Image (tube, rainbow, N blue to C red; front, side, top):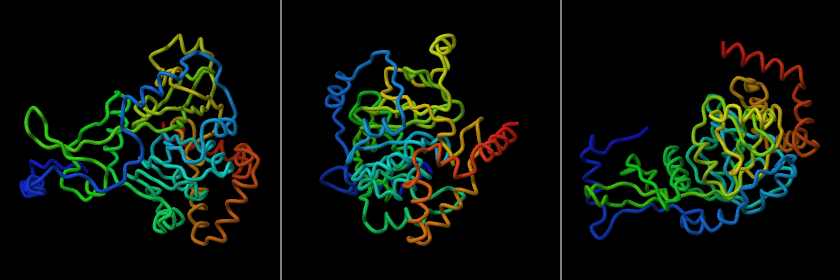
Length: 346
């Protein structure tokens, strides 16, 4: 919830008098360099050629997602998440990664299951919305395995917007006087025009982002239907971008209706054709989330030994995402979920 400090004079007084010798700043760690010139130097060396970028999920992970990198995932909650790539990250046994915990549900659950992370910019993690909390993700966080820096959902969007705009920081007001600000890496600054105080948020350029879309061509021009949240900003802030797509469409079709292109090809490094690639998450207008399978995850996580066997069955002993889909009911189950989504859309 955003809070306007003008409506609460006591909080405004607290902010004004908090430190007589300087402006307040958060106590949280800063993961990443907010220098726009350093980011610009990277992007200047990045190819913008219109080339065929198709590769498998395994190839994309091997090439672009490394130990220790900063990873960001698109989508919203369990909506339009690139599960196909997340499974490959676990099978590749990636470690020591940083993560953008923006609107995370099953994606964070997966990465905690694989013990892939040691740093998290956290706004929404551990919870799977109305489904409940992930017992294993909670264990991982409470154990101290990952170092946290806290933000609001809006704050992380502002950080991505700053990066997409080539700036070193963005501004907001709503974190002033909150514990979230204290646990963040933000800093209070004074407006040069009005003298009012705002929170400066460091720009965030993830090393790699993965965004699941409805359609893309082989070059990476991508279309999204439904809610996009901060994916437009994320696509422009990420140093490397992997697109996973429900369908590949001809470039001619993209050119015939260019206004539908949400992400242009020159931002994209890899294109992975991944039908049902968001399963067990929801894909708007395509298929509903598999609530039964998501509840299986939550039930298995209660006991670490049972959960270890569950992960072996569904991820580590599975060759690829297609085999995982077969284990979860195959085409019959996927058709049921497609029918559920179509009924909901009607």
